[in-house]
View (cartoon, rainbow, N blue to C red):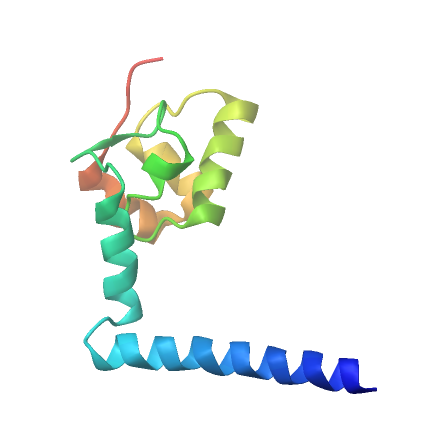
Length: 110
């Protein structure tokens, strides 16, 4: 009984520390959007991303493209071949997001 109580207490402390860190970051001006932007800028992010050759990390440099959407882009390329133009990206990420990232992407010729 004592072991499980200790495990619960440890888990609660860990959770409380995580919440405290998050609240501290927000209080210091590190809103989740800023933390995400800092993470992306820490990675090597080119000015324009070639959606036909970029890897997962590079695709994630695009605003609005997280791990799931970046993986969907890679999966699309594997199944269907290269993107023929920026508009073809809308089939994977949606029209609004494709329009948003269009200035930041380029498409290498097949």
